[in-house]
Image (tube, rainbow over all chains, first blue to last red; front, side, top):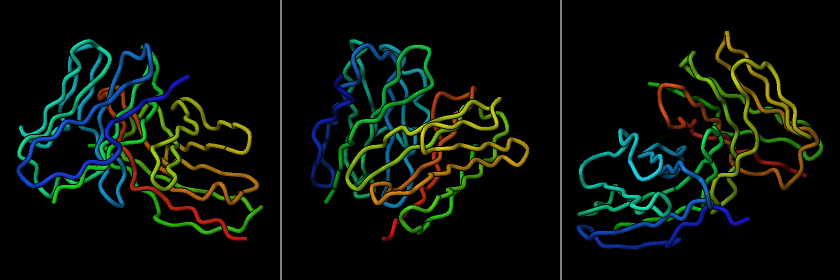
Length: 113
Length: 111
């Protein structure tokens, strides 16, 4: 079946602009996670949704970052007033109810110039 | 918080076994994972082990867990060129919903 998909695959934006990154989880998966991977590093947790609600947003670096999942499926990660330090690959993962397996999408590479 | 460490690089010859090591700090870690990342691609879940197990084997992959030393290893038998990638160790604790990843080990397979 289809895996986790993320759009766009690449995004180049200017410093100070607003961006939205989209994640389509595997159908039926109730849990959705966002991670950020900087060059040469492992992914770092940003936020976790169980259904429509953000169950844990402790990894969001500051209030410029926000994520929603209004219908419990697709999620959008929103970054306001982008900074060059936001440049990274943003990864989305999903997991079925009761499972500890997280399945990752291909990521969105964000470059802030 | 949890800290997960891996060596940065490993080079092996095709046909040999590879052993990738990982150490972690949180003794309450319940699930421990190995992911594979190829250039420009996302993370592929290879295998995982529950903390009440010492070993798990899945085809060419063997995972060993030493809870006392908080040490996890991944052995790849008969390593092939297609195994060249970055391998990430990740741990999950029951008190947090997230995975904590190591910095990854780059496996290079030479002919």
